Amino acid sequence: MQYTILQVRPAEAEKKLNALAAQGWKVVSSSESTWVFSKCFGLSNTRDSMLNIILVKG
Amino acid sequence: MKQRIQHLETDVVSLLLKTMKKILRILFIGLFLFFAWPFFLYRRYGNLAYRPSGNTIIVSNHYSTFDAFFIYLMYGKRRIYFVTIVNVKERCLSRFVTWLFDCLYLDYTKTNYTFFKQCISILRQDGIICIYPEGEINLLKFGFLEFKSSFLILAKKTGASILPIFIYPEYMPFRRTKLYIGDIIGPEEYGIYEDLDEAAMFVQSKIMDYSFRVGKTKPPLEIPGLPKQK
Image (tube, rainbow over all chains, first blue to last red):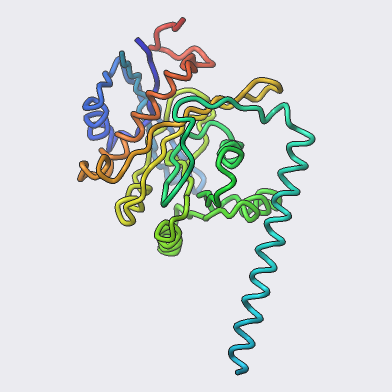
């Protein structure tokens, strides 16, 4: 069993994971990292997030 | 007659510039290797007999700034165009180096028509392009960021073959960087996928497999949720 990490954007995660599953990769666990970017002295905030997915093969 | 002379002049000037650039590149690499050769030792695995021929897109993971340099050391006999982001132009040294190594500039904020035009014309003339589809350096030096699918637009448009390479850089001197050269992925293989994202994941899964074969699968840090590997 060998493990690796894949970092993907949540919007396209499902599609990409399906493509990886077709290649024999299995998802072990996933977590989400989120950042908030403050603009204009905090009046405008934008969020960005990334899914950290642990995959296994073998 | 005047026009002909002007054309001839421009041809001679461009030829001179190209030769000067080539000499400068050889000098630069020579100096670099002379002073820092212990950092640029590498070992190749996988498809060792492969020599680039025809239109090819070299696709690789991106753990270090010097990944492109190793690819150049391997296949530098053929002219390789490296794809880089336009931000490298902000600094003098990186601007000079990217100019020297025939880089193609990609701007995330724009539509990049000229970039795609350049790439397509290079590939149609049997050229080689090296691209890092993750789009940025993975500083964790473990795992992968998602592959963007733009290289597949170029491949599908020109029928180019894709050469996947896994690079594991070593920053310490006298420790060899590991390069796993994969098998060529022809248009008949990636052409099966109508969806570009799926095709990109197919190429990425190949490179992920190669990372296991090189044996560099241990994370440098303790990552929560990841079992301890031997």
